[in-house]
Length: 226
Image 1 (cartoon, rainbow, N blue to C red):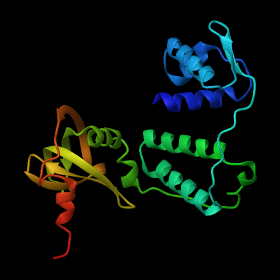
Image 2 (cartoon, rainbow, N blue to C red; image 1 turned 30 degrees about the horizontal axis):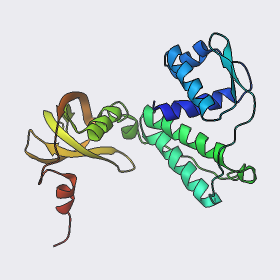
Image 3 (cartoon, rainbow, N blue to C red; image 1 turned 45 degrees about the horizontal axis):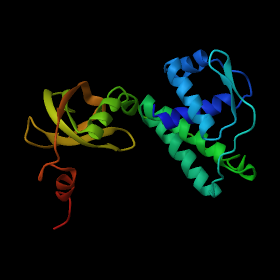
């Protein structure tokens, strides 16, 4: 978790007006007590009305208000619908991130907007193929973000089995399944893999560079007319 996100979460915990021991906060945030001490010093230095001391505990003595956000009801519905989609169709890490985003948005909304979503009905049901993708998604997303090659054990739709070394470039959601587009070093060409049909992913420490002819834009050009 990024430090800015942790500081926000600490404020949410302290909003209850009770005294919290640093050790309890450390357990909740999954960091060391020393890190909590530094975070509390940062909150105090930034003007957050936190009182307390090391060895005793910390308490928020005054309410903290986030800057208001100018969002229409339709914009709010779009955000909540998008977050609901992520919570049903993405891995646990992204599900938790979506929940945190909505918390931040709801905390920042002016009071007249509270309850703006009352009566907004929504329900999303993920296909089994989507749920089966969750175990592979965090590793693939990290590989894309950090440009790391992946070793995968893959079963194609026709039942054929193969082991590939790929450079993952992008993930796509098709409503019933996630796919990963990448440059397959084994086949020396672009390939699209169903994420739910990847049996095993091994993240290598080998970084790849975006080379001409092997980048995502080169793959997309194959579908341009003319």
